Image 1 (cartoon, rainbow, N blue to C red):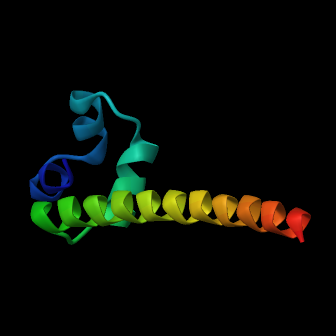
Image 2: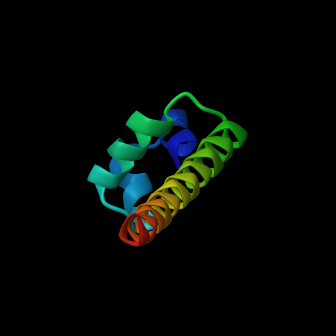
Length: 75
């Protein structure tokens, strides 16, 4: 969509055709502007991996806290 708007069309026409708001278009343009499609896909994959790792760290932190409480009660 960003490439379409760069070629000749206005952002409003592209948004209308793809049924998205102009605000969404400009947010995407700010985030992904100047990137190739493969770079944008890689960025998206890295963001998803980062979120997954953050959840894992949070889960492990909770497990550690519970184990420390259990061990602390026995001593």
